Structures are given as C-alpha cells and as structure tokens.
Image 1 (cartoon, rainbow, N blue to C red):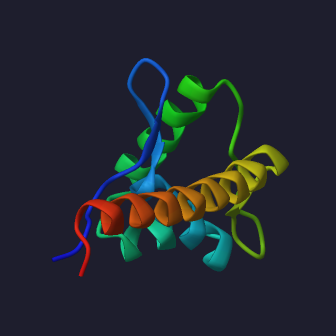
Image 2: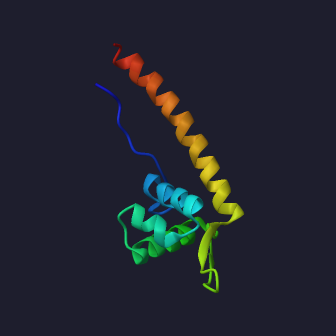
Image 3: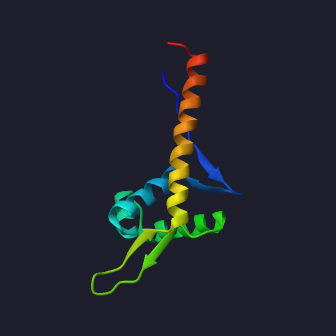
Length: 109
C-alpha cells in the first residue's frame, strides 16, 4: 500500500496543479506551447485557454508568446512563471516528505 494524493493551488477555483506544471515544463523544454500541448495529449486551444485562465486567477503572466517570423514563433516562461514553477516544485517536494512521514506514522510497514 502507498499514499496517493493531488496538490494544487486554489484561488477561487483550481489555479495551478500538476497538469499545468507538466504543460509548462514542456514549454520550457521545447520552446513551444503547441508542442508541449501535443505531448500532453491536449489541443493547442485547450492549452492556451488553460494557461490564460491560470494567469487570470494568479494575477500575473506566466508565459510570453513570440509571434512567428523567419525562425517561427514560440513561447517562453516569464520570470514570474519560472518563479512559480520553482516554488511549486519545492512546495510539492516538501509536502511529499511530510505526507510520507505522516503516512508511515499511521500505516507502518
């Protein structure tokens, strides 16, 4: 048996969690929201709407879109977006440690 849980940030509705985190990690890796969305099995429109909703709930931009040109367009995380990702990663890691300790306390091996 193991512990399973979901963690997300809420601001009058789900604002940020594992799905958007994975999407943004994909953008960070590929430089493309379209490519990151495809990797997540999500349409570009759904990804774009999801990130727009997150930005609205959080009150800051997390993604900067670059309009296409000779080398094509792309997307990069804003400094606020990068900060959000780092803080979410740290929060998730700490929460995991604490929850594992509590789990072992109540369900020892």
